[in-house]
Length: 221
Length: 205
Image (cartoon, rainbow over all chains, first blue to last red; front, side, top):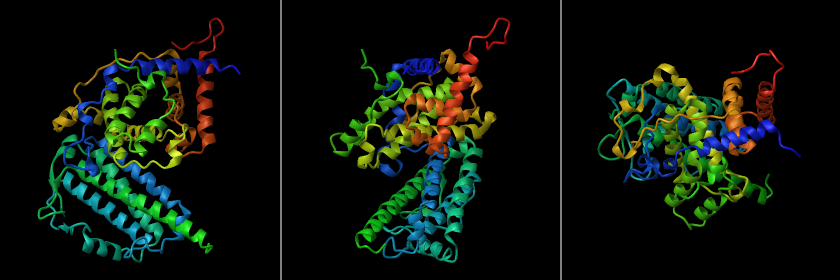
């Protein structure tokens, strides 16, 4: 079958555009080298609002896909770990989405935070997490899904509004992973948030798929 | 002379060998990243040059690769990703480029003037050169950019670069038939405009 001449012309022109990209573009640039000691959570910290917006959009879309996943609704009250149900885990993600937005907003306003969230080694801020889940106990799944979505959307709006100087400024955040509060940029806490969200998304997908396979195997479905 | 890039033909035939090597531990994440960068950097650069022009393209290019680098550190490679047609990395890059473009458009014309030059960025992350390139697009691509709505242009470029239709649909949150429809619409518009006119008829410059 003959190829459409217009499509053929487009393909030729596209190839020419790609071929015209300078050869030096094929060399990995200096800015694409990892920051030593930062680890996989933030090997490279995006510094521009458009990159942070895109990273959050990726997380928000994945959240929407989870929201539409029937398996998650079916097993919402099942245990994902000894302490939490899947609904609790979603509430945990929603609580951190709200907290991260609050902190990013505070950072852009130059506000000093009058509270601290203390992380215990290896297990994180257990007290803060437990309280955040408790206050969401009465919420429906829809309300939890909405809460996360709203907080991420507001954070994206904020990033679009702020100046490059706001993004580059180091702030003392109320997060204490060691003895002192974290001093970081909004870019770094956004990267941490996205890493944390994706870690739990993966956990939900993997464990639910295994749970479903197990139920099928045992003929309980 | 430098080795030709696999992307030189405008599409990459398969990324599966790189993913397989990474999954089997034959190459390190860093080495795998280098190979994917060499394969796809020209495509990503070309996408942005066509969509937003050479000047803004450099910043948005940097956004996409920074995000991909972080994701690649913990990239999961299930067997279905190794199918030659799957192209999960190309799909991710296209999807991320689309999100970056949304952010860029939302920032608006005034904010676009606030360039990265105003920000104190660690030395290790600063681009060595701010390339100012003028892209010479062909007649059909130039015309497509002028007459196709953004959603059709997105589909057109993604198809030309070899992004699977399923991934284009997922990124744009539409069905695959809608993707096909947009693609066919774009081609039909171009055909109409490129058609030789009768003497005295209107013509695009």
